[in-house]
Image 1 (cartoon, rainbow, N blue to C red):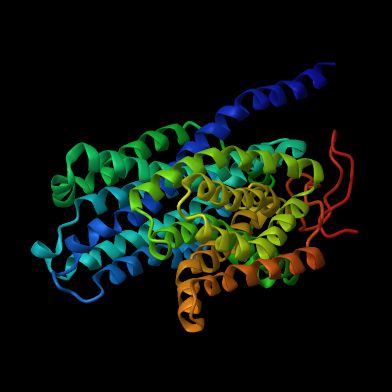
Image 2 (cartoon, rainbow, N blue to C red):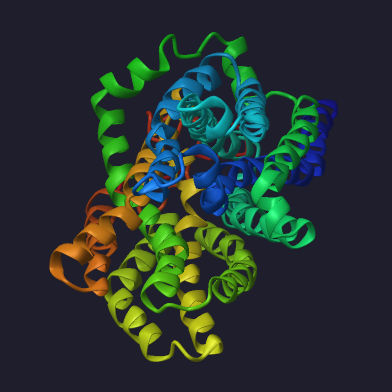
Length: 462
C-alpha cells in the first residue's frame, strides 16, 4: 500500500504541473518564433537601413538575409540536439532561448549602412544566422521535453499546444510591428522605431528564460543519465545506425517535408499571392491573415488530439492528400473572388486548416518514432530540413517555377508535388500508430514491459 501511494504521488504531482510546463514551454517557443519571423515583417524597413541608397535589388538582398536563417536551422538542430541528448533537455531549452534573445537584442542595436558601411549588413547576417541556429535547437527540445512527460494517450494533445506557437508567433510579430508603426508614425518608425520590436522580444525572452530555469529535467532523461544510458555521440549514432537513418529519411519525406510545404503555402505563399498577384492592399491582406491565423490556431490542438485516437500518420496523410488535390482549384477560386474579403478569408482559412491537420500531430509523431538516447538530434534534423529547407523554399521555388512556365499557378507544382510524395512515402513506410512508445524507446528497439504499460505494438510493426 505504501509503495503504491509513493508511486501515485509523483505521478499526481506531474499531472498537476504538466499544464504549467506545457504553457511555459509554449510561451518560450512562441517568443522564439516571434523573433525568427520578426525580420520578415520588417524587411521593407531594414532594406534602406542596411543597404546603400540606389542599390539595385536591395530588397532581394534583404530577403536573402532572411532566408539564411532557414538555411542554418539544420545546423542548430544537430548542435543543440547534441547538447540536449548529452547534457539535458532543460539546459538546451535555456540555451536556445538565450541565443535567440541575445541575437534579437543585438539586431535592434546594429548601426546602419550610413555609419558602418558594409559592416552593417554583415553584422545583420551574423545575427540572422544566430537566430536560425537558435530556432533549429528550440523546436526539438521543446517537443521532446513536453512529450517525455505527457501520458501516452494524450501526447498528441499536449505537444499540439506547441504547434500553435509558430502561427501565433507570426501573428504576434505582425501585431507588434503594426502597433509600433501606428503609434510612432511612419517617419519615426522608419528612422528608429523598427528597433523597438526587437528590443521588446528580447525583454520577453528574458522573462521566459527565468521561467525555464525553474524547470526540472525531463524525468526520462534524468533516469537515463542516472543509469548511464546516454549516447556518447548522438549525431554519430543517429547517422551511423542504418535503422535510425532509414527512419530519419522516412520522417523527412513522409512527414516533415510535405508538412513544411503545406504550412508555408497556406501562410506565406498565400500572403504573397494575395499582395503581388491579386494586387490587394497590403494592410487589408495583413489584417485578414491575422484574423484567419487566430481563428485556425485552435485546430492545431484539435488535430493533435484527434491523432491520439486515430493515429498520427492517418491525420497527416489525409492533409497531404487534400493539399495535393485542392491547391490548384483553391488558388484559382481566390482569383475569381478577389473582390470579396469574406470568401477570400474562407479559402485562406481552409489552407491554414490543412496546415493545422499536418502540423498538429507531427511533434508527437517525430518524438515517438526515435529512441530516447538520440531523440533530440534524430527528430530535430528531419524537422528542420523539411521545414527550413523544403518548406522555406516554397516562395522562391514557387516563383521560379511560375516564371519558367509562364503563370503564377504553376508555382503550386512545388508544394503539390511534395504533398503527393508525402502521401506515397507515409503510406508505404510509416507506421499508422506511432504512439506505442515505451519508456521513451520509440522505434529504437523493444524495451522490457514496465508497470502500467503492457507491451503493445511498436512503431514499424504490422
